[in-house]
Length: 194
Ligand code: UDP
Ligand code: MG
Image (cartoon, rainbow, N blue to C red; front, side):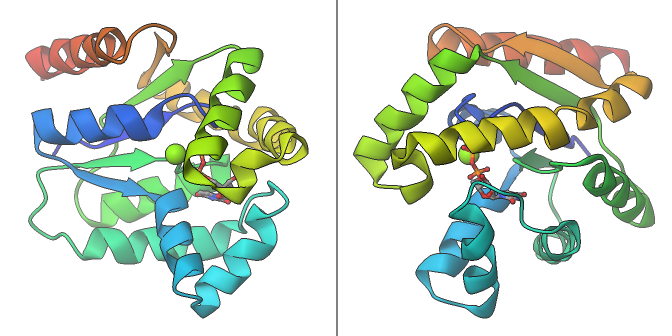
């Protein structure tokens, strides 16, 4: 399997690049943020719980997110691989994901981390907020808190993958196609050696 963690701060372009990667490599895209938003839209219990965190730009508790993610993976027993977008967001989540994938006799192949300067992120998110109306993208205070939470709780999860030799940083500024090329280059180089 080809299991990719697509990593990076809010607004780094994970969703955009995931859509292109899914097509090229025939993967299943799992975005925990999208799943939370789907539940919020349908006003499920999970949606109500998630909303109380998302509205503040905080993380939904690990256990809730991990259980939800595992249930999603279970829906695709024949998948050629997954792109995990926006997950794991903490080292505890990364460890839980490893244990879970191991129980399925698979594991994470690579972490691709999109790097984008903070002011560029804020610009992109405010623009996305205008277009999508996503409430956590329209308020600069919430955006700044999301970036703070990313820096304090999420960025460290990259160390976990780095220790396993799986971490690859990718410059996330440029055209969508340029960034996509950079990601494909790493994936293809990796596929050659296994
Ligand atoms: N979120 C979370 N855990 C996740 C995914 C999302 O807690 O695994 C929450 C968190 O509050 C985050 C929001 O959902 O700020 C939006 O996440 P998403 O990944 O969609 O935003 P992005 O980082 O892609 O802009
Ligand atoms: Mg996203």
